[in-house]
Length: 461
Image (cartoon, rainbow, N blue to C red; front, side, top):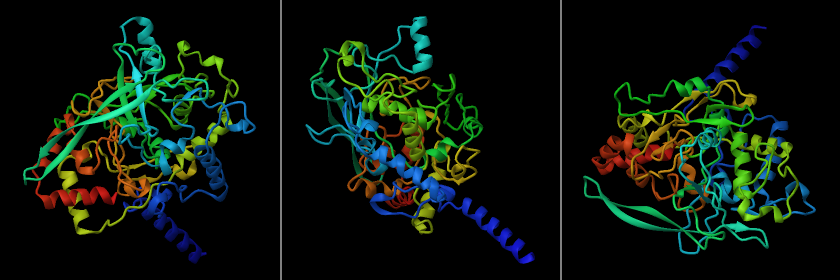
């Protein structure tokens, strides 16, 4: 009996130590997988049965949807206007997207959000409370550059770049590129003259269920909208509409934290990206003027609740890969620089998750390096497009976990920030402004050795 009790205590101690291990940023969900599939593994602590559920969700995430009617009626109803026919086409290997690099390139893993300013009327203000934006009257809330046979795409996305050079104190020069968006060949007439545009690449899918499992109180305690502590950082939560709960809640997902949970995020992507209806979004992103009701559909609800359950489960349980080179001297020194710069004021290193419907995600010590709050990032990164309570200068702090795997997963160069303008982590840092201006200026003043150590730390995550 004593031997068994000792074994149980030892097991509990080991489990506790594992949960508090920075080398395992996703706690017990962390995977040791490396290489191109590092982002595509199920949470390590899932049971065999739950891994089967994960595989079912993966099939609906990976396989293409088709036009209706079709013999594959579980995946028909695509379009008539859409951006892609499969989730995996944007989140390649469950990783981040990229902007088109050359003239004529397809913008498949980058979306363009559309809206117009509110006129201040009570009707539009009430719409904003529940939808966050006022859609462009003809083209809706998202530009869809593909269409089923017989329908016209909404337009063609063109990106070109203006460049400028930042000179660092040690004489190093870094070229930064500012994207310029053009919508060519608009398929349904001119866009509204006051249209607001926002380009967004697909973010990586790892660890999303763990972020969903963070207690709301642990996020709100970090709000400081008036910068009452004088540190120059004034994060605040976005407040968004939860369709199922029929109430305003804290937003967590999307580049401006415009979605409250993964089910609604996934349903919104089905509607906007693929033109597929669900119980949360019974209509796709197709304005009346476009005549989408002339084309066949896959039924009133094209993504059934069962399929949505499967895709949501998959989205919740993609594992975060283990950190590498944690004990390298450059990584340790880089972490100290990261903290000294004040980066952790937005990129909060760790949390312990609360109770979640998934046992695998509950009570895990995690290291995502985000506060999930909105921060003013300055004029350089501004899209000038509000979304719920986020203004045109604000962005949600993106998680940094898994950052060192980005290039391996992409199989090429990785692209950073909301629109993929940054080709390196240093470029991404040099685009920081607003609340991060002081930290950026400190990086500019660093020696080459210090910058190398800072980047080594980021690549260890």
